[in-house]
Image (cartoon, rainbow, N blue to C red; front, side, top):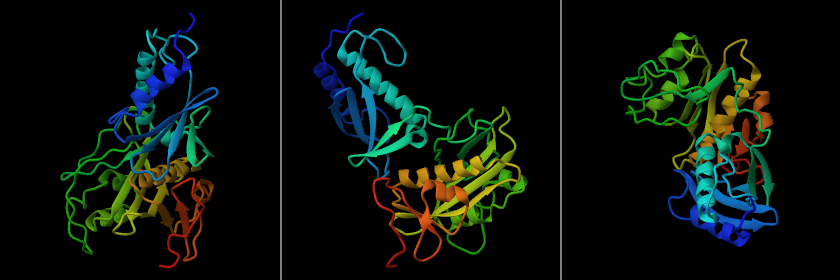
Length: 296
């Protein structure tokens, strides 16, 4: 069936749906929708990430949903459907899993043929933290989005006190050293703590983890303190851990990630030697590499 809506009608409807306050999903902040010869460029910010992202949306060629195939009766209904699709994509890791291309100061996202963030045999999630830390139930299959819960922080000290002394106990039982992230909890510096487990019905065994901390009170720089995978675990899993830790930092507003860890996966992500030693990464893809410790 031929489409009866003009491109201007479609553009206007999409702008109405995607540029209004509260559009799409939590963390999405609209910037603009720009018409191009073969589609529209949806430009937005994601959480506190310093990048400005863009996503290409093609003009409709038939009066139906571009993802469900259901019939659409108007340009506005089609635009509402696009907003729902964008929400679904963002809530399932669009920014983290997409291929990236820099264009006109935007990071253009493309999910076509993009590799999975983590090998399908494994899954990554945040280490659950609360006042009473219990052995966690495995998240749903493929879940690796951010998982925040409230927990009480102790005063900085040389010893680890509850609840930090129980945090990640299942990782410790699996033979992994959890001293660093527990101490970061006590010092109120923990930026993120991620865990890797085998992606099966039990969500066991746990096979790796990574932790990062805030380097400054302004929360502009994150330090990657720990990246560990058990022997025999593919290097792609360690790469996924590092990538997701960087994503966590960027989404919380960090401009730089620094580390003294030196593994090939860091260089693959764009980490470069810093003047003060170690490696550094600028989380904004459109900014040239810089040393956050220069002049410190």
